[in-house]
Image (cartoon, rainbow, N blue to C red; front, side, top):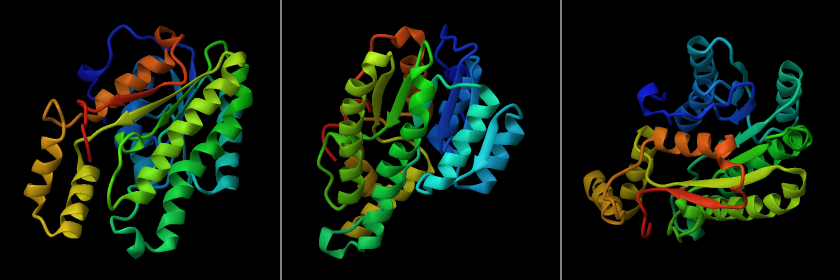
Length: 265
C-alpha cells in the first residue's frame, strides 16, 4: 500500500478513469492508490480474492473483481463491467505478472514456461485489446506496461521471466507506433529490485538454485545496483502516475527503468 507521503506532488488526474490489472496487491495496489489519490476513478482486478476484498475495504469506491489475466473471457467480462461503470477509459496499467520458475532451461517444466508467458505477456495483450477503442476516444489516453529490468538484461536461470519482459518492451514500442496517431501514449516501466515479500521469494529461489545463502544472494543483488539500494513500490507508482498524467503528454514508446541503475542480474 502506498504511503500518501510518498506520492508524487502536484499531479492531478481528476475526472480520469483507469484500469489496473493485478491492482489489489503489491506494486499494483500502490499504483491504484496513487491514481486514486490523484483523483482518478479506478477499476482493478486481481487473481486473489483476499487481495480484492482488502482493496475494496480500504477503497470502497473502486470497481473490483477477482479475475485471472490469462483468462480472456474473464478479462473481457471485467472490461465490459468497468467501461459500463465509467462510460469510457483514459488509463490502462498492465501490471499483472508472475516470477515464473528459477531453473536451467533444460530443467524448466514446459507448463511453467507457458504459464509465465500467458500471464506476463499474453495477459497484457488481453487488456490492451479491450482497452484500445476506449483509449482512442479519450483526450488523454495512456497505457503503462509494467516490464522489468530483466527486459533489458540477460537473466540466467530465469529465461521464461526475462523472455516475457523483453517481449513487453517490444509490445510497448510497437503499440506506441500503432496508437500514436490516435493520441494514445504507450510506455513501459522497468522496475528493478523492488523491496517486499515477492523479491524476498525471488532471492530465496535463486539462493536455493545456486547453493548460496539468502544473505549472500541478497548482497550479490545489491552489489550490482549503482545506488546500492532497492527501490520501493511507491517509486514505481510515482513513475506510472507521471506517465499517465498530462505532464507526460509527449512521452511515448519509452522503456523507463526505475531501478537505481541495475548493472546486471
